[in-house]
Image 1 (spheres, rainbow, N blue to C red):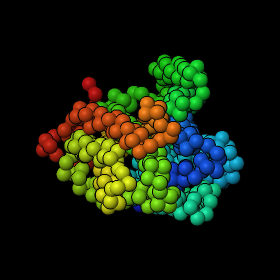
Image 2: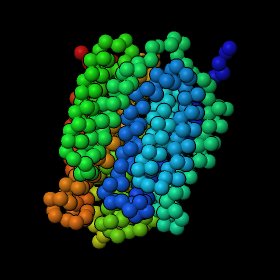
Image 3: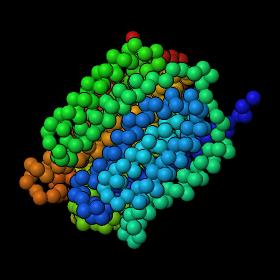
Image 4: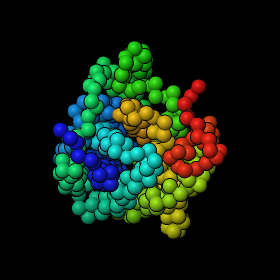
Length: 476
């Protein structure tokens, strides 16, 4: 049966809408954490588990997303993922305790693990490489609106309604998404069925889950030392076993052979370092404004959303920046500016004029978004189309691991400062120390990016450092 031609613009809109729901959920939740802590009678420092449990589940199941889509079809998996995410949202709203919330967030994570990477895979299959930069930029516009409206919506809901409604708002979006996917997206499968690497999925999932949860437990200072050692040891052992397994399997769940592609490898390394720092922002900034500044959730939401406006503004300018500067210059110099702006959040104080805070966050959102736009695009510059599903699973796995690490690392830095300073709870100086620490991690990204070839990705950006010469960015 002949397959109808998929309209790329329609696909972009539908995938972006799914990302909008996911991003809205995360930013609304981050603003509501202090209020939810009071509802659950929990320490605000321990509420980061509501964020990391979701990201942890993403890291566990994302490796299988590409292979499952290849086997069962992109439309079927994408639609089922949206449905599971929506059901998880309802369960979150009904959660009576923090641990019930964590379990429901893991259900959401299972849906999100398929939703974003499979949606991106659909886009990569219908968009030509020549249009990849522009398509990636416009794909993220609706997804960026989620973080813009999330903080003020979340602040309004928890201040004037109830935190439960931050999850119920996903239900109509999810139902609409299921209908749109059914009507407008064709089923796309690989013509040749590949063997499913179940052993690899178990080993990779166990390694990622134990390592991330071990870091999470250590960062929150809960549990005994032997629990942390057991988790990290099990995760490390599972990782070694997976590595040995992947060397023998013809199509491993996480294909490390992709790291032979220089542009992909640099994007994974540098992007992970930057995302560790950026992943800390949704945890640190709302808590700093509410605990350190004494603001309400609604007031903090009206401040934290500003960085997303900067991110949205970047989407229009991204193709021009990449064409004028090239990927290498963007990753080095824009990355440096983004790091400085992120670290400058450490200087925020209640005496600052709100306009000054807005300017810093607006600029930070703009440059951070441009940096990640470059990472997300050049990662696929030299990946062959048959390997796109493996590449999206691999890249998204490390993307989510980095964001999880960002929350855990920032929580550990905050708790460490509290302990060193002898405070009975986090103070403004403790938040400053945490911001400076994650800023130091982010600084390593533009330094590593210097290894990228000057002409890397020029066929995507249109930039030419060496006229007439475009080199394939494969490692020797």
